[in-house]
Image 1 (tube, rainbow, N blue to C red):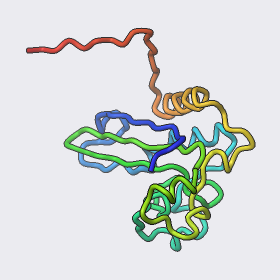
Image 2: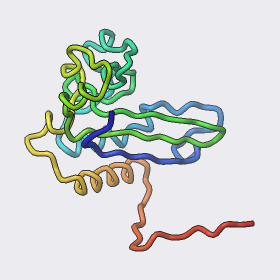
Image 3: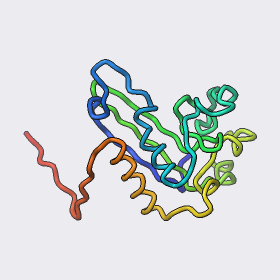
Image 4: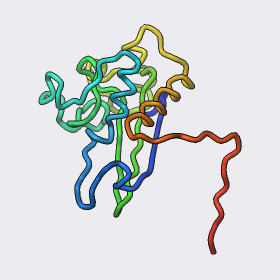
Length: 167
């Protein structure tokens, strides 16, 4: 369930993230920009694998935010957001979410099963920060973290560029 969050996605060639042909780039390397983003907010973010109690929370669950994969990002032992990847040939598509807040009552009304104790395994910016920055500020910080991590420069256009189709 996605609600009150910042979402991101990007598509790149495996070489764009430093992956030599035939070598798998781990989520650890690709998600480094998210760690940088959370740290820019003053949060101590890390990977689930490195957190205390990881083995107790790594079992799969129907509510993906409750189970912790090795390279999910955690703050204070709780998973924040999520990421997914699709790879085909030389292309990587990754998308993810950064929850500003979690409305547990809404989640329980909309989903068939929200496990007991889910609140103790999952967090959002509103639970970790005294004040959550406005969405546009968060988006700017996320773009900066991505740019710094991968050494890319974003060019913002007032009018979207149209791609010419080649027949």
